[in-house]
Image (tube, rainbow, N blue to C red; front, top):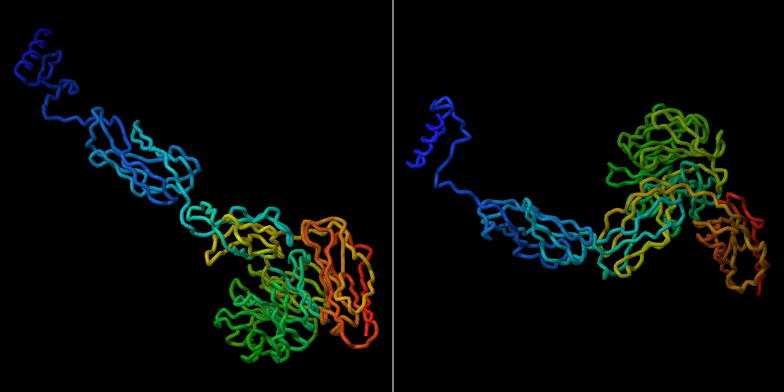
Length: 599
């Protein structure tokens, strides 16, 4: 049998045909298929990929500009391979943590792959790219990436968590940059920074008897973080911020006058008499931006015009059950519902109710009776939280409460006993970004070294603008409650006597421990010279002296007017009213200036 098998194979070779080897049993079929031999002379085998080469090299370009690279795939005979082959590009030498963008994998056509939409995003010297396919690779020559065209501004020094009214520990800085965040060192021009997300909401509280002082508070613990010296007359009952001009508009009860208050400069302007006793002012989202208020005496819903300082009645609001009058009105930003205080008996502190006002139907539906008496004003925070304040005569007077807007149940936050004046009015005021907010860029970078925010809040962000270009928001940060000042502050002297022609008198204060935030000391002003034209404190009632962060002394001058009127000696008295002194105040808390006549 062995001899027979050999003869068959030999015969097959001789006649040029393919035969299957016979099995041990001599049969002609059922043999091993793997032992068959394909002897087709037309069958072709593709040459294997043996090398890659870069034939078009990347050149120095700006960040984001498109590069062109061509790669050839060759066999062992250095011939271009004909089969389509996938080639991938990546960064090999990366001097600046750049990223390669575009279409990074291409198939060869006739042995050539072309990459014409790839780019590198970061400036750097000496980039190289690597082309790979299987075990083969080729590296490009080195090339550089330069900065691209000016695209805007970006934060390089981010804000961090900080206490209210305290300078941020590290300067916030921004740079002129291209679309990929590369710094443009030659960028110049003024850069202005502002709050992008204004997370802080301040409770504003005003005196009910005497000059109105608006204190800016942290609603969670009622710690004052600053205040406005507003030279209005008395009994503020309505206040809102007009986003169109950034001014606060304030209505007072005693004169029915409307005032504007510049939150940046504390400048107050008397706009005129509205003829109505405004109780709360709010924007009507459904009324093309009209401003609504309630009149205390007539229960009429009013439309207020800030330009002419006039009010127009839209008609009386009818409550169910009937009420005597309405007090402060506020709008819930979460659903645009108008809430107000309904008094069952005029001026009575008892049985005051929370109502929802329909400005179209001119009706008021009761939510519930406040669980505390003497509620004089309400206001909503941006998140829809409701706050209320009580006035004199209440069981818990001059106190701030949180309110359940579905039941009118109140929870005490705290009393305002440590603040100037009485309660009786409350409103939400956006936080202010203080300090130097516009600086000139140097070598493409603008740094803001003394930024402060006057309101507690979570999730603040900042943005910058230059020549119409606005940055993306900064990283979010929080502002926490200002901690009590751990030093003791005192006036340097308690008395001064000056001649009428002295020009100005400096009032100096000192603190024994420098603070990380500004320390604001507020003094009430009394005396004949404070109430006429003999000094620049005419009609002022409070006088702030600020000791800057890091300093231990400060002073503020009062100008003295040298008139030609023969008159007796006059005085100006200063008395400490409010401070954040956790350790108490110093020995000298009052100061008297005696002005002797020279005529």
